[in-house]
Image (tube, rainbow, N blue to C red):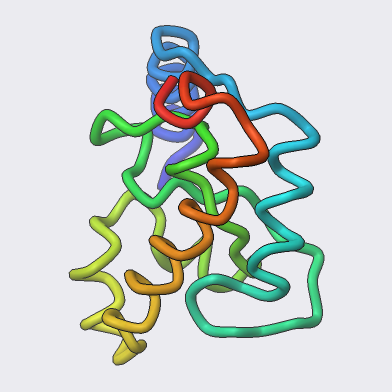
Amino acid sequence: MTGVRRVRAARRRKRRLAGAVQDLTAPQWAAVVDAWGRCAYCGADDGPYQRDCVLPVSRGGRYTLANVVPACRSCNASKCNAEVTGWMRRKRLDERAFLVRHAEVVAALVPRFAPDELTG
């Protein structure tokens, strides 16, 4: 990617992020990392983890408790802005196990945080 293209892509991302409500708090992120305990996609447990939106910002996702999972650097870079289930199939990762675990984690965090914080 040329320098001009990178600058343009960075500007577009900045506009998308500024246009959407990003309401994931530090305590919520800590709770998500504690609940998963590893990379949500590949299971790597060596951290540090990056915040990855299950539904990417470029596709309408936001940084909210129900949409963010911890990802290792490799998975986060590889997934980029792909749809999670299609990306997991291409990488031959266990899509079903991820979806079940994601639902369990979100359900476990509901009692700890107000419902409006989950959906934004």
